[in-house]
Image (cartoon, rainbow, N blue to C red):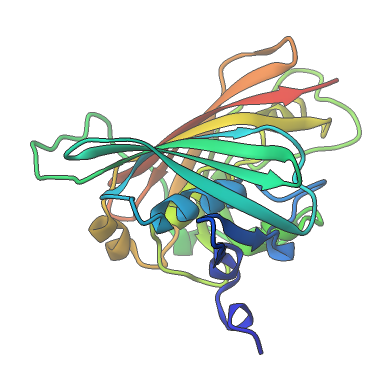
Length: 274
């Protein structure tokens, strides 16, 4: 049995081999496969993990913007990480995922050495029953990455058919979600969780059409200790969108701990076609 075969599928997908030039070699994971390529969240996680593994990296992740530049083919890839600028407490890193001569995805990331400051939550956690009171979603589309997570929809379960809804439906969803099999939460897993929402255009129209996230930015508000305290328990995730049209729509989301603390916020722009 190989070393990666003994790992949780998520950890296997974010394990790399270092090259002599400082690059990291990895491979796509069948456990996180989407319709025509990897689930975007695992790509974000791979880029973040590569940056965290860089010898110059300081502190903890604060922000990440991922641009999905080209389809990622099944198989091998290389990630190159570059230190852009580092101060005493804040650092900027750049990473790109390359297949052949193609930059398939890139990311800019902010890391920081956090220090204790004044704390305040300006808004409260969405009201939801505890995860154990919400049934696990059983029937899912036949996409491998959906089986890598356990979904418990409180509201806004996407319902899709062969024709669009007569009138647009709400873009909001509220759900408990957790890695499957269970895995303790960390920043790399949080980066992936920021993309676990079905793109809102599918939900609003009730119809699956060509669509893809073009760019996604995630802000990590919790430090490593707070994420460790969450353990492998489900997090509460809320998503919404405001405007659809001219081939693009926005999408915003929040990730909350069971203790009522905001762990991450994220926004993305999604391309779609009729």
